[in-house]
Length: 395
Image: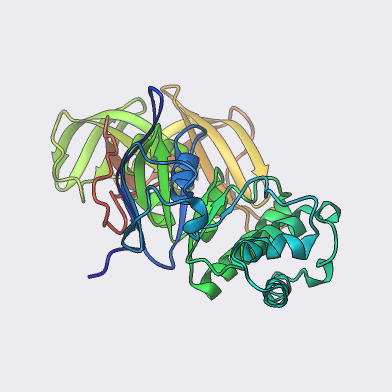
């Protein structure tokens, strides 16, 4: 079995006494779109810079196509980096910017222009070939930067928050451009971003980092629905997180004492837990159900249901976000989707009075409860694991 295209093995990066990346172990398959996310200072950009050759690991090894690349110069790696600032040359026009990498490789002038024009046409900006980059829009400059990086036909493309300076509508359009290009070219994309929507819209797998350590690697769905740690649950999505103690395990169900009372969860996947264990309960905001004050008491006794009152509501596009407070003073977030522009809301809201202070009921099924063992830390161990530890989310 051949080795993955990129491997980080026990990689540590220090800046003086500060450990920016700590014992990083993971791999990337050829043709994969991998996104690295995390809060500022988590080590994601340092990781990308080490892969690009702009930083050298303090310990450990990075391999590309089976070859150690720790000491190889950036220019010899063929792993171009598209910067957040794009870093286009203001003294060169569009086609000269795109030709630059080919010129450094001593490609003949005629071939350079042909290849550069091919990529400008592919990026749908060939009409701007002779225009100064300063006269381009943000989206056009973004396409020039991509063309300049891809004209050398690299096996790996690195992208450091390339869409962060664009307007929201341009971000969505460029996400489509990037996804299409990656699939058409079949090359590996390693993409750093703060944006959950960007990561989940484009990536095959997502890496979540915190304080220099990988918290979780998984598909967008895994990371969103099955967070490996409390940090991931808080960082991704719209999760309600409750700390508690397991008071009873019976009939494949976990009974957890929390700040809102007893919460019942499916035991599946948690055979290692025992009575008395501290755990974190994670319930996605879109998994909560809302009911009127006359919510029937005959509901199955296994359901999680709690009296509450409405604190606030917020309409953002098609999503309605409600904040409720339980009788114990614990706030819970609920997200529902509007069915159409006529404010025909989710059926849960049809018969609910959405006035501040109104009494309500909130409920969720046992299978919607995700359990994270308390104080579980993520020391991602296997460099060859396809998905890493189990994942989840909404916050």
